[in-house]
Amino acid sequence: MTLEEFNNLSDFDQYDIIYNEGTFIDSIIQGHNRYVLYAVDSFFVELYYQSVPNKVVGKRAFVTGKLLDKYTIDQLK
Image 1 (tube, rainbow, N blue to C red):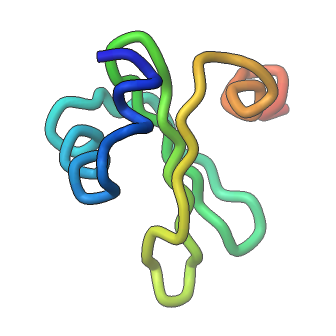
Image 2: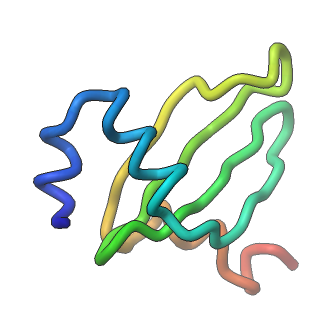
């Protein structure tokens, strides 16, 4: 599946693919938000949660770039 094909799916189908076919990579907490990174085929999907009420409030699909930088070891120091 390509990023474009993923983006053309409904939200329901996107979440289905993330949770059933995606590979969990990492999660981080910044302030009151938690970010969870999944790999899906040749791209990444980041889900972000608000700590209250602990639910997904958004998602972003991308190939690489600044969104991926927060998960690197240098950024965690």
